[in-house]
Length: 263
Image (cartoon, rainbow, N blue to C red; front, side, top):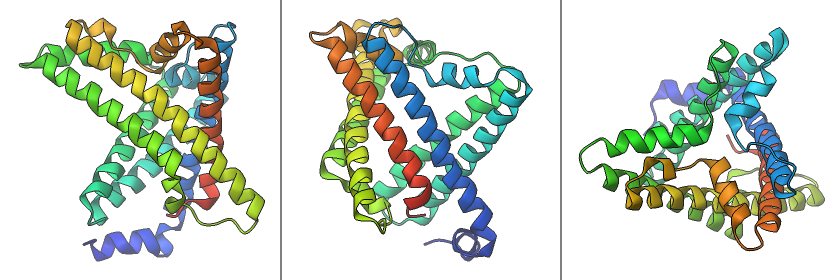
């Protein structure tokens, strides 16, 4: 049961600015996914690139204006993270609490990355972060089991994205657009986007699981490493291009959520 103060903040006049900032967070996330999708397509056609959100944020942060933009993006993502955290507190369903808490953690990490880069910190690529996480976990008691559990958890998250896309369960989180063609476009963007992102997450999870089996933290990879593995598979370039287009579709869907998300 939600507290009166939280309900007031979420539904009353005092929540208007918070809601607008949280919706802006969807736009920031969407633009990042569109840019990431473009990089993945470039990798698929052999033009090179690094599929890493931290690097993309760092590319924005050159110069004073870039740093201001990063701080603004970080603030919007932080507002969205706080909104999701509030959802995790106020909802009564355990599954919904876990989902909201997970989303809050993702948006909070992105916000922290954007602000830290704006303040002058060097961007750390996600593959290096994956190596570090796996290495730290492996240094703990039953470390390989922990790394394997993380891998399986990421695989499960990927499968959830695929199922959510195929079944269009994401529509429950949207208000219906007044124009039918807009609604149809958003549904297709959501379906393609969730499936593509789920596939990429599944590969990341598989790499973490393989790192646990091999007892080698360097086998764990982020999205960039997952894209490289897909590229090296049979028919890999075509798969990578499809994934890149899917990420871009997910980004456009996230931008549409700026207006149509149920908050």
